[in-house]
Amino acid sequence: VGNINIALIGNPNVGKTSVFNQLTGLNQQVGNYPGITVEKKVGICKLASNLKATILDLPGTYSLNASSLDENVVIELLLNKNDKDYPDVAIVVTEVENLKRNLLLFTQIKDLEIPTILVINMADRMSYKGITLDIPYLEKMLKTKVALISSRKNEGIDELKNLIIKYKNIPTDPCLNASEIDPIYFDNLRKAFPNQLLYKLWLVITQDVNFVDLDRKELPNPSFTKSKEDLKRLQHKETIKRYQFINEVLKVGQTVDINSAKDLRSRLDRILMHKVYGYLIFFGILMLIFQS
Ligand code: GDP
Ligand code: MG
Image (cartoon, rainbow, N blue to C red; front, side, top):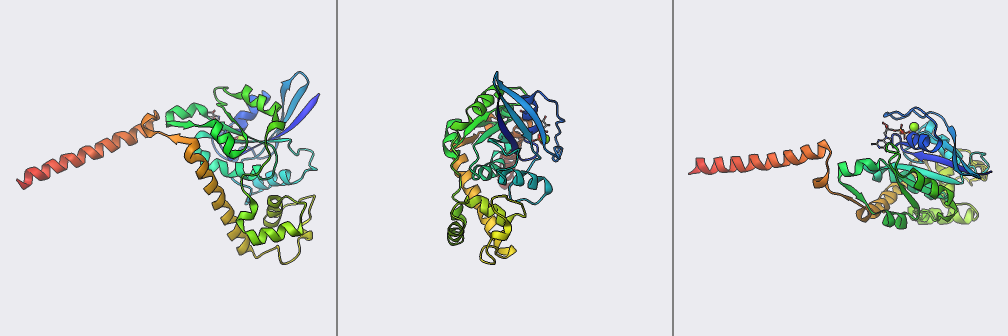
């Protein structure tokens, strides 16, 4: 029986565990607070009579610029091709209401040149929020396959399984050209390590993680190990570049029409807006009466 290794990655609270449960038929605890998935959990998803997927539900992480133990678990797995759990496919789970923030992590995973499927979860919330998405456009710009799903309503899961089966069709081009972060620094890096993926190198330099292809000791000192402040500055630049890219993509790929939103908050906002206009007109008329 063929097996596909899958890593399920995403920010806290996007519905990773719900998607995991849908795919594997397991019943892991779902929670609406972050940090409930504290360790790697494994499940099996049957894809066809002779094909299965082994799925890892990883702890929620906001980015690969690790600051917590949870985030380190994800980075260490993705940097080590020899890890027995190293994924054939990464599935980055996002959700419709926080897509912009969620996509930061997606672009980072994508830049590790692992076939990456983008799952946009909580599709059932779209009409409430007045959100529409141009999926073909998102697929083109993000160079990936997108599954728009609702794990709560069990919608889109079969489509996701089909994307997993055909994971070899997913392009592995990165979203961001790492050299853009700092052309001179990254050019030197490329010259010193011509066979390494630039973005991986960058993660090894900035994070305190083990990386089997390259030991931190191999980094020539001090030219590549800049000061902590300099590295922080470059990381900040990386984040800005990523959000620039994401904003460009979402400008066309996502529309939010507050007037068609059905959720209570948007409705209240609209009513309050009308109220404000109402009061302004009312006081305007009062002023006119007093003046005359
Ligand atoms: P995780 O932290 O990424 O593992 O997310 P969970 O699977 O624990 O889910 C977080 C919260 O989102 C829970 O309250 C879920 O019930 C809710 N949730 C998950 N999937 C969906 C969905 O498709 N639609 C809606 N409306 N809520 C969802
Ligand atoms: Mg979870």
